[in-house]
Image (cartoon, one colour):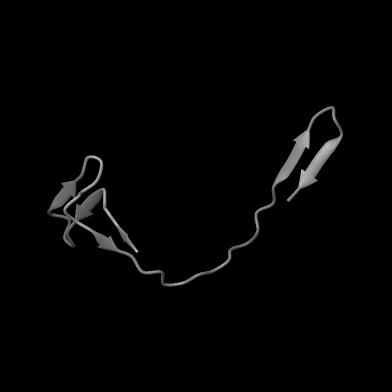
Length: 56
């Protein structure tokens, strides 16, 4: 996957380029290292005075 970056810095942090809104002359190639599932998030919906409650 390739994207255009907003901000590019070298390894030492001495040189920085900022785009407005993006840097068109540079591309960054991304690689997915790992797919994982995290803990489920509990969502609670409730409407007061209507006796409606739901969890997801």
